Image (cartoon, rainbow over all chains, first blue to last red; front, side, top):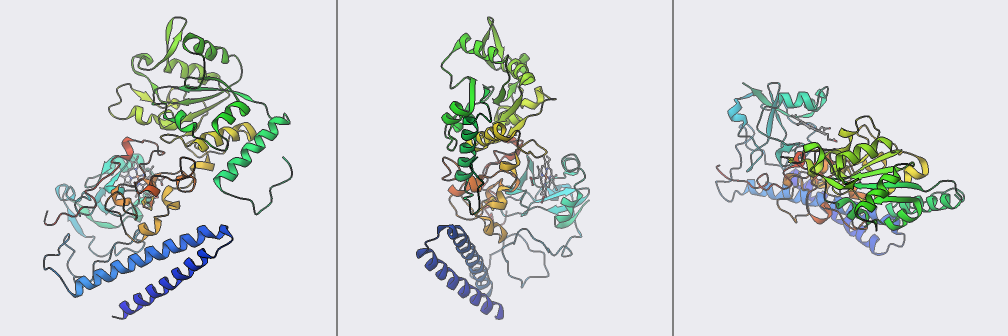
Length: 175
Length: 301
Ligand code: HEM
Ligand code: SF4
């Protein structure tokens, strides 16, 4: 509840700022300021959208409309946590969460990033989540599609770039 | 140049290009620089780059051709045709020249898949011309996706065995201007820089840093949506196009701030994902250009 009150305040603040920006734009004589103000308006609007999505999700979980609202199965244990839209890039992902899960190559092959599934790939026996990685738009990357073991491809395309792997959330091990 | 430019100077694309043009004109007038001969070869491709160049402004293409370079040969723009045109090409090789090449080099059957004319009664292949002219050029500009890395001409299954220009001229320095097509500013700006100040600074893939240094994703007006995970589900949505297959996050070039067709708009500005046309490996490495099954959620699959 306290959260919701804070979000309401934040939205009100953004709306006030947007009103002010629109007023400034309307009375502006020095056009060099225009791009900055427009950018701020744009940012404010997308934050408002983000917050309203969050509120809508919150409302859905408090007053479930239909019992069959399942998306893809959430790892159990945090059921009362609302499905917040993923924030990318995810700097502090709960890596410890469930990264001991094991995958066979067949199981891995179902995580293609399609039809609501996450996108996973394996490198050196570790399974990584690339669903929201910027370089993997539409779960594809330089001709590679998610759901496979790319140990060799990684070694040939990103030799000496272990740091890339360090930034990816680990979801488990390939067995 | 008359005096220095003091701040606040305008930093728009138009203003910068305009300054380059007027500086070049001034220097030409004072004979500080000389017009240089330019040979523009069109090899295995669609001539899309030359079409794009005709859309240039500040400097516009006609201006560039008439006042900054001495165009010795251009398949699309010259009046001469047939053997007469090829004669001009061969004669131009005697002096110093800048070589600009668009289109890939077709290797199959010793280059016979791409013939650019007849010389001494025999077909002159693109492969022959690229090697011969490339070896003797003072500077080489590889223009567009096909010339820089094979591009669309080299897309699978690549029936003509097309490759980028560097492959047939492995030891020559060249400036690479990837893009499908090249933006007129990237080509004309690079050429103006070459004439005024010499070769521009390039990255490790030979792309001029002045145009190719920032990731599209880092200058994209939809970035706030990406950072908050708000994604478009279909073409036309105004949010981040990542889930539809946007290649802005792997493509380094200045489209978001430069824009196209006289700097009026660009793909993401028109609600369609970036297809990574200025990334090496385009188009195969940038496929799929659009994908709906990453946004569609199928329940109980
Ligand atoms: C076919 C082989 C591959 C090629 C040609 C390739 C190419 C590239 C290129 C060119 C970039 C840099 C984009 C830029 O910032 O300019 C990149 C980034 C990236 N690649 Fe690959 N890649 C390949 C395989 C892989 C594999 C197997 C993985 C799996 C982990 C991977 C993960 C990434 C990630 C996460 C980034 C973003 C790095 C960052 O945040 O800076 N790549 N790739
Ligand atoms: S639309 Fe493309 S370039 Fe823009 S923020 Fe989204 S992924 Fe990045």
